[in-house]
Image 1 (cartoon, rainbow, N blue to C red):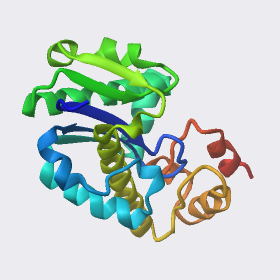
Image 2: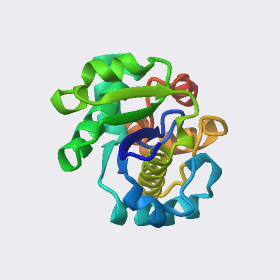
Image 3: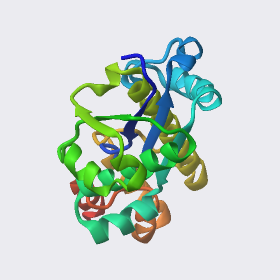
Length: 209
């Protein structure tokens, strides 16, 4: 596959603390040399992801959609469906990139909603392109680049929240209850939505007395 295409991926979906981030990235043959070392962000250390993200940002047209926890919780309360929220973020990021750089192909990783929900939310530019949703799409360079941009932004924002509230907020959804309880003891239950995704069952466990 040699032609330019837009890849899209997300980070933070399964993490109790921190934002949800969706990124889209355009990659064409002209970028291959500059993207050495770019692969699925899950196969990289945090430090590698952060360093590669800077490289990708300089080389490729991209868009990063950030839903910090407060915003995420507001949107989730309205939409009440994570896949539809993800699809909205994917579509928005894709459109932003296509405004900078036209492309005939969009590749997305397949999440539970499948590509059709994303497709239905695309606007004029996105509808003109071929949309492919596939399992393990990160094998494609454009999706891998998007996954790194999303992960790097997630890591930066999680660190920022940790510093703001003076508590080291862990990644993931296991081993977070103790930290959540410490957070609530220090900052109050009313501030938990500023750092955590409240529809996770974990929030109920954190708030239990």
